[in-house]
Length: 106
Image (cartoon, rainbow, N blue to C red; front, side, top):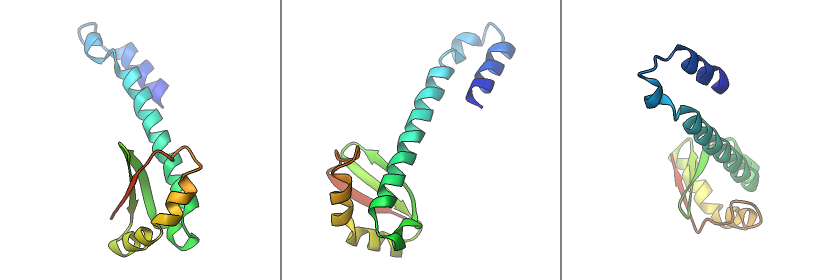
């Protein structure tokens, strides 16, 4: 879809608008890379948690050195909080090893 949208914009955009939107392909590329990284991190977090918690993880993302885990309710956030040691140990050997703090949200 990205190439189609970018191609469409290039074909239909007036010359006056091209300077404004010329950076769109780079922005789409950055956004796609960030989305892919977040999806990969979410899968790593799910795999590191006990099976009962995995289905409740909505997403995971990094904010600096902080890992943010989003779950579907406060009750599951508390359970993820109790699994932080296991999560930290599992992620220590992965690409997500750079996080010092973990946070969960609902």
